Image (tube, rainbow, N blue to C red):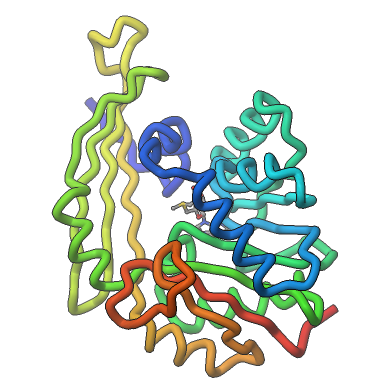
Amino acid sequence: MNIKERPAYTTLAEIYDAVMQEVNYDFWADFLDALMLQHHPNPESVMELACGTGSLALSLDELECYEMWGTDRSPEMIAKARQKNKDRMCSVNFSVMNFLDITIDRTFDVVICVFDSINYLHEPKQVLRFLQECQKLLGPKSLLIFDFTTPINSMEAIDYLNNEEDTTDNHFHFLRRSTYDAEKQIHTNRFEIQKLSADHQTVEEEFVEVHRQKIYTLQQMLDIIDQTPYTVVAKYNEFEFEEANEESLRITMVLQCLHTQS
Ligand SMILES: C[S@@+](CC[C@H](N)C(=O)[O-])C[C@H]1O[C@@H](n2cnc3c(N)ncnc32)[C@H](O)[C@@H]1O
């Protein structure tokens, strides 16, 4: 069978929520909610960049404290987010947008970009561009909150991410293989996705998506931020109010920018 190579987050959108079923987005939303309240006097409007299928934005919306927006580069992921918005009777404003080309003309109290979406930026200059673009969305008191995963996380993850799973709910089957190049700090996830017939007996189509992420150390990220007008308000280890360090697996940064573009 002819295996079709697809860009990241096109076919995967069909099974993304099944792949992420272990992720507790409500817990994540509670952590971010606490973090926003800790560092902003009155957070009301929140933009999630790279929101994927919208699970986190929807969990935040259900707290009924925020005017929620969500954007992502992938139209397929946003289509899923919009459907869930409708199904859950939420009111998140979802749209397609590349976070390296921000076109929404307003500011938010908080801009969030989590679940290692930043790791898709392979060069420090792209992270600089991201930080510059985000300035368009930030007022003087606004927060930019983003996370990234570290080399230690990738080294641990490859032990458990080589998995094969059936996602029987929507007739797809996937196999994920993970590798990590420690020298180049590149983490690769290769997803082989099979579309099954209604009775699950036949493979109708096969797709491959290769996701490559650059894995930054804390010091590398701090060196990048140092070149910008942002100040680091806080940096947290995983989902705790504990200072991140070079041993952290996932780091959540809270930044503020004194020179906003608004
Ligand atoms: C690991 S997923 C995280 C999705 C979501 N934040 C979540 O928690 O489930 C990474 C997301 O980043 C998005 N993404 C990658 N590069 C992007 C870019 N330049 N602009 C906007 N979204 C991007 C992908 O389309 C994908 O939905």
